Structure formats: C-alpha cells, structure tokens
Length: 201
Image (tube, rainbow, N blue to C red; front, side, top):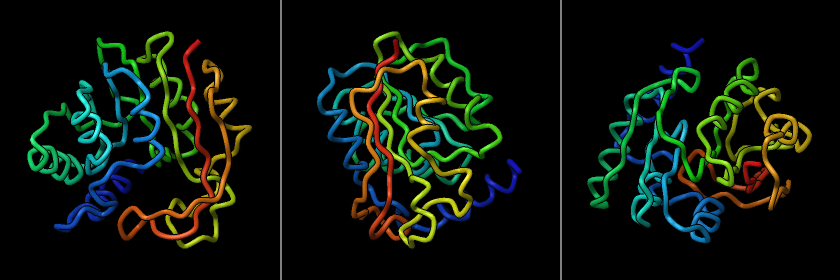
C-alpha cells in the first residue's frame, strides 16, 4: 500500500511544472498571516508551496512527505524563493521529532482511512498546548467533482469525523463550503471542502 502511494506521488511530481502551483493555499495563507511566527510542521507537504510561504514569513519550517520527487521540488522552490526549510522523507506514522510546534498545517492531506485517526492523533502530539492547526481538505460531497481529491469516500471528510479525530482541539473556525479552486492542474474548479482552525486544549 505504502509503496503504491509513494509511486503515485513520485509520478505525479516527476514533471518540471509544479502540479499544485507555487503559491500557498489561500486559506492557509490567510490564517497563518494572523499568527506570530514560530515553529510550524507541514505533513505530506509535497512540492513545498505552503512550507516555502511560511519560511518567507519568518516561520521555522519542518516539512515531510513520502515522495522524494516532492522533496526535490520543494527544495528547488525554496532555493528559487531564497528561504530555508527542513524537509524529511518519511511516512506520517514514522515521523518523530523532539520539537513541539506552534502550528500544524494540513492542506489536502488525505491519509488512508485505516490509519487516518491514528495519524492525526500522532501529529497532534507534536503540537504545543495553545498551538494551532490550520486545515483544508475535501469533504465527502466532493465525490463526483472533477476538481481533485481521492475517489475513495472514506478518505474524504465530514464535520463529524473532524470533531472525532481532532477532539483535543477547540475550533475557532469550522465550516463546510463550496469554493472555486485554482491550484495548478489537479486542483481546479468547483470544490466541496472542509476548513478549520483549531487550538490545542
């Protein structure tokens, strides 16, 4: 399963162009800009657009992904933008850190259903009390739209699942809404998403 996922993402990121563009996710940018810079963790960060943006705003960035092609593109983007990011090649369950983070950014991070709850709990263990999670991903209603996301409904989100999987958080914002995506070729068009900002209790 993991090898199939790794191969999928390595193939997706293999081309010269940045699959999801080089600009940060707009909700992530909007919410990050409200916070004082500190340490940020970006799991499944792919080609690095959010990591590079955070670094440009003086955040100390730790990112990881399973895709070596994604890491290479992210480091290339960081060089283009003249910023420093730390980027590890690891799966979510294998990720370890002695650091605690002020923010975790989860943008279109859709872990396989069988590990998802445990993966989210594992990541929250690295978040400081009072730290923020900034999250945007596809809702279950996205199934059938051509604007991106997993084709497996179990990998998509409902508000109820968010509440269950992030029960350590108090939500400042939590909403399901229809948006117009414009993030490269694979995130384009009308999309059904869930967004939240949560604070660790």
